[in-house]
Every structure is written in C-alpha cells, then in structure tokens.
Length: 178
Image (cartoon, rainbow, N blue to C red; front, top):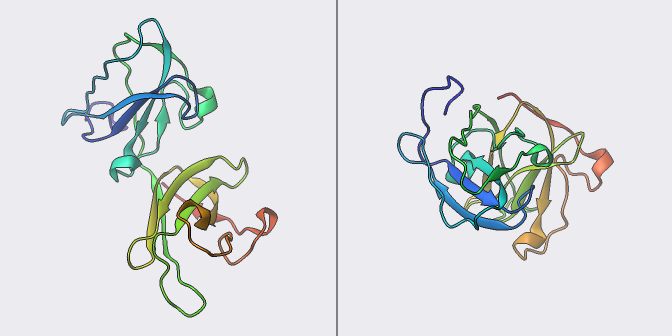
C-alpha cells in the first residue's frame, strides 16, 4: 500500500528468496489492481525472504524487504505459508541523465548504477536507452555514487563515477530527495 496505509498499488513486483539480499530466488509475481498478491510453489516449512520492488515495473517507490526496510541484511523471514505479508511503500526519488562518448555520440545500452554514498550498498541500476538516456528509480532520500558498468553489456568503455572520475574516493555525491 501507499504510505497512507489504505491505497493498494497495482503491478508492484513481489519476489520470494531463500536467503536475504537477492539470494536463491524462488518465485515472483506482481500485485493485483488492489495491491494484493499470492505466491505459491514455495517449499513447505521453509523460512523465506520477501521483497516489494516497484522500480522493476517502472513504479517509483522505495524497494522494501519484509521487516527490514531498504536494508536486505535486516529483512525478516516469514514461513512459506504466511499470510498478511504487507508492505507500506514510500514514494521514491530518481536520478536521470544522458551518457555520450568524447565525440558527443550517445552511448546506447550502457549500465549505470547508484550506490549509497556512505555504505556502498547497490540501490538502483538501469541501461541507457537508444538515445543514451537513463533513469534510476526507487531511491530513498540520500546521497549516491553513480558509476558506469560497461562490462555488464559488453561495451568497451573505461568505467567511471559521476563527474568523470575513476576512483571511489573521488566520486562526487549525487543528492536525491524523495
């Protein structure tokens, strides 16, 4: 539901994992028009971890792990037959931009990702479109390091952080307000 606690959100991706932090994916689904979801086929008596991921469906909400907020290490397990696994999703901020080479030609299909500026935790990633543009959704208020990852898509560019630097310490923070 939205932060008002009553309005369901349609099309949010909900996934179940065997372990915290995206490890051991079992199954996933999207929420119905009223914000409800059902996931079946989980091994019985297993403790699992559940995430609500709006950005996977281009919805700009902060990703939430059940019982742990945005921190996957704090996620709380639920039993495979649990009911009322509810999420209260917060509206998120975003970062968008354009990437081009030294000749001014847009770079297509380049992966860009955002990490929490202090902890280094990965929070969002996307590939540039046919015009070299990108948009990272689902970001809570905070400061981020942006980095390219050309190796993700097989491009031959030197990866760098926002504002044309090549090392972690030199990366300029990008501020987001949700």
